[in-house]
Each structure stands twice: as C-alpha cells, then as structure tokens.
Amino acid sequence: MQLKVQQTVSPGDGSVVAERVLAGPSEIDAALDRAVRAQRSWRQVPVAERVAVVERLVPWMVERAGAIGHDLTRQMGRPIAHSPAEITGGFAERATWLAGAAAGALADTEIEPADGLRRFIRHEPVGVVLVVAPWNYPYLCSVNAVVPALLAGDAVVLKVSSQTPLVAEQWAEGLAAVGLPEGVFQYVHTDHDGVAGMVADRRVGYVAFTGSVAGGHAVQRAAADRFVGTGLELGGKDPAYVRADAPVEATAAALADGVYFNAGQSCCGVERIYVQRRRFDEFVEAFVQQARRYVLDDPLEPATTLGPLVRTAAATLVRDQIDEAVGRGARALVDPAAFPRDEAGTPYLAPQVLIDVDHTMRVMTEESFGPVVGIMPVDGDDEAIGLMNDSSYGLTASVWTTDVDAAVAVGDRVETGTWYLNRCDHLDPALAWTGVKDSGRGVSLSTLGFLAVTRPKSFHLRTAG
Image (tube, rainbow, N blue to C red):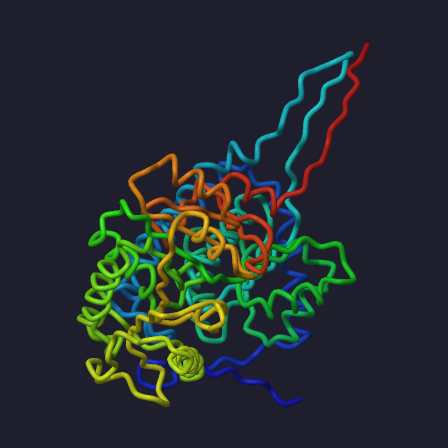
C-alpha cells in the first residue's frame, strides 16, 4: 500500500518545513490500544501526582519558548516577535491555573447524609480523549483540552493541523521529559478519514475539536452512531461596540490589536466594529492611524508586526471580501501600496479598514480570518445590539465605555459566549470558554471544563445498622 505523506509549507517563504508519513488504520488502532491500556493505570495515580507532571511541564516548555516560537513562525507565519508568547503567556497561564484547580474540581461532591445513607458523586475520567487542534493557536487551543484530560486521569490522543505538525511532537517530547508514563499521551499525523475513524471508535470517550463550522459538522457526522461527547469550538465573527463615552485613542489602539494580531487569524479576533455616530469620524481616524503602523514583512524579521496569512488561498478569500464590499459602495481607507509585501497571489496582505459597509456584504457577516475590519456608525445601544446579534456566530463580543452598568445591561442582551468590557481577544482560564450558535457548543477552561473530560458516578451507600 502506498504511504501518504503530509508536507508542511511555510507561508513566510514557501520552504518545506516538515514532511510526515500519515498514520493509517493499523497505526491508529495500535495507538488507541496503547491509550486504553495506559489509561487504566494512569487513572489510579493520585491527582496530586498528575498535577505535579503538569507543574513540571510548564517551566520545561517556557525554557524552550524561543525555539518553539521559531518553529511556530516557520510553520504558520506569525511574527517571531509574537510567537514565543504563546508559550510564556497563554500556555503557561492556562496550564498553571488548571493544575491549581484540579484538586477541587475533581474532588468528590459530598451530599449531606440522610436516613443512614452516605451519598456522594465521583468525577471519573471518560477514558481516552481525542483532541483535534488547529494551526492558528495550536498550543493554546490544545492546552485547553490536553491538560484537564491528563489531570482528570484520561489518556490523550492529539491530532494537530497538517500546518503545525511539530506542535504535537513538542507536546510529546515535553511530557515524556517530565515523567508522564508512556502511552498516556500520544499524537497521530493523519487525514480527515483517520480523524473520522477515531471519532467513531468506541475506545474514544470524548472528542475536543477546534476548527471550522464545516469541520464541526464532520465531527458530528462521524459521531452520529455513538453517544460520545463532543466539544466544538468553531470560530466567530466577533463584534465590538464603541459607545460615545469611550476614550477614543486607547480604544482604537486596543481594538486594532484585536483585529490585526496574528494577521486576524483568531477565532475570537474582532471582525466588525459599531461606533456611536457622534464619535464615528474621530474613532475611524484614530483606528486607521493604528492600522498604518503595522509592518508587513517576513515573519522571521524581528521588526515585523504583521506576518503572512497561513496560505495564499486564505489571503485570496479576504481580498475577495474586500473587493466585493468596495464594489457595493464600501470605502477602503488603507492604501495597500504603503505595504510593499502586499501582492496578489501571495499570502502577504496589508491591514485594511472599510467604512460605508452594511450587512449585505460578506465582510460583515462571514468569517474573514484575516487583517480586515468593517466599521459602521450606530445611533445607540438598541441598534448596536441588533447588529451584533445579526450573525450566525456568537463566540465573543465587547463593549467600550466608562459606564459599567450600561456594559452589563448591553451584555445581557448580546448573544455570545464571552462578553468583554474594555478588552477583547483574551481568554481567562478561570472563566468558561464557550460559544453559541455556529460558534459551537461545550465548555473548556474554568472548573466547568473538567466536566467535559469526566463522567459523574453517584455513590448511594446504606451504612451498617
């Protein structure tokens, strides 16, 4: 049988970063068998010892953040100035918080004794957890599921995007180095059929998937003949609302970062902004100034602040959205000629700001996943809320104001998984990470995230006498 080979091409310079032979059915079958065997022993390890493994992993990864960041930049194109922070920032913060929360989250839930009965609920591991992670934040998206699963006593099989295969290998190296028993964590490089086969396999007790809406539907179809839990984080078209009392300069700077960081390739990146009308012109001017400050260049250059999109097709999709909007009357406020690396037929794309947009345009309703934002004026809270909710997505949304009571009142009416005041594009590990509508279902992070990788078992004990 001919072997299938996966090739990873860097968006930065088109070089081949890695080639890997894909696992077929027999290799996947063996990996799942190993996971099942290893998990039987791992679940018996005390929680404190599982926590210690994660606590040793964090400094091991942080010490190597420079090399890990370099590899990440080559694989998916994020500027080298930013890539190491995925490890030293979010990865370390989330893994550390989850390790600290594990004992309490996994402890038995005791029910008050009654009529000579002892009653409690035990949170048992589900067995083998399949984690399917994307390329845009491969460590951050995978840590949300891998760490709580290991802490809960599950075994993990990780499948990362073909764009970032070195991420899975780095996980394996790190966990082996800090003493995780063999077989408890494994990775497979495989294709869509391989993933579907694992989802359908009864040895898998839970599936954590981060990716596109189409990918989420594929996971659901593969799971259709089983009663297996699936957690689906599927992206967004996240809005921001700037009220008239917001400080314009600071708000524009923060939102520009929310739009353009990682070249806009973030599920919770800001893709549309609504501004109260009397501050609209002032805000747009400040925002455009921020956009023009970005440096679009080779992501391995330290001065680069905006790298290429992950592939040329992704940049072409964003260019098509921009062209369509302009063709329907929108105005583009940033001249791509000021960014020499911006060139059709390449993944390099200048930051763009569009005004005179509306919700008949794809750039305001369909996920862009690139460095573009549309900005619309609104007359007040009601209009802003209506437009924010006019979306098939609901991952995060933000309001920018000095009025905290108004922020909470508006947030109560916005259909979203996370609501921010005066910040955006950030995950707090103490808070549930979840979405509504086509942004998916299920919860990761917070103590609630442990519920996905465990199952409750009720103990109903009549004591002697």
